[in-house]
Length: 433
Image 1 (cartoon, rainbow, N blue to C red):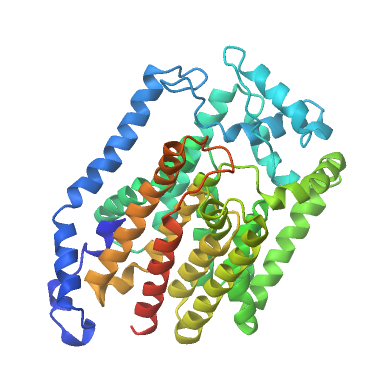
Image 2: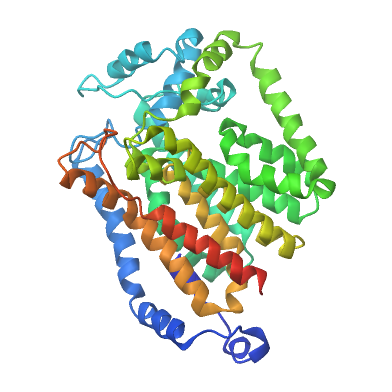
């Protein structure tokens, strides 16, 4: 996305002194330096995707697995398994992790499958995968991969109004984000969330708050993704109360419609809820949130992790409040800010969920006209740090001779402080534009 801050800006607009904030010459020189090297970012994204496709072709597409024998789109297995168990009349086993691990191993008889892909979402979400649960896993994951790519294309079109030729380049940069690559290659549902956010924004822009709230309510399959919208709604309750009613209506429909069909699954979900909220059995180097940052930075100071993460989240909320006070009338600014807040302040944000940052970038694109150099650097910093940070943290652990999957090693997850600076600087630009 780093090129989006510099593309399609008319020379007449830039030549108007009132339209452009004063930018230090140093910022201009730095932005010019990186603009001239944009080809390297494009090549990195192309190489990443081409390597992935070649690895699949030379691996075992029937599983599917790559050259290393790793099952790709493996996260899809969690939802596929849950829907399949419900279809087979074993709904009570959906949250039985010991049973699920053995069940999933039987789906890959040619693999030594020892990983648990646990289903952690509310029960109603599994029903979305009912239609493809009777198909082989590889067929199901291919269908959903193409659905996600199609949803991403339409979501980009819903959010921005540009010349159709520009939309292709915009789509390229959205697709080039490393978190978006992770979402697709892991088989994750980030793009579904992206589409729900985009649909919510479009309905709000069209003056339909209740319907927008109903669409936003679909995010209840990952309730933490509503964090930013909830904070915004509380601040602006006099104008957003219809949105709240829409979210409640969707919640009642999803829970009330699914509970009578599978009460056993809901009971299992409630039992597993405490461990799911803790979210402490994942590889921390793949997590990009304040909680994981402190877990990696101070692995043995466990009593400090949640308090420090809470302070970071409160600071992020404070920044959002400052933005709201100045730009509350600007839907695209506030919606983009709510998505950014959700990602940075949530204790559950994984690398693939940062693909939603593209939505913030798309919504804030019009602001680049007022200060193109500063915005170019911010977009570029976000693109680069999300591309590199995960594996840089993994490398730090590996160099210490520590298994990256453990919780014992020290590492610095660069994305959190860098994205905090990006967010802080963006708020300053938005408040003064």
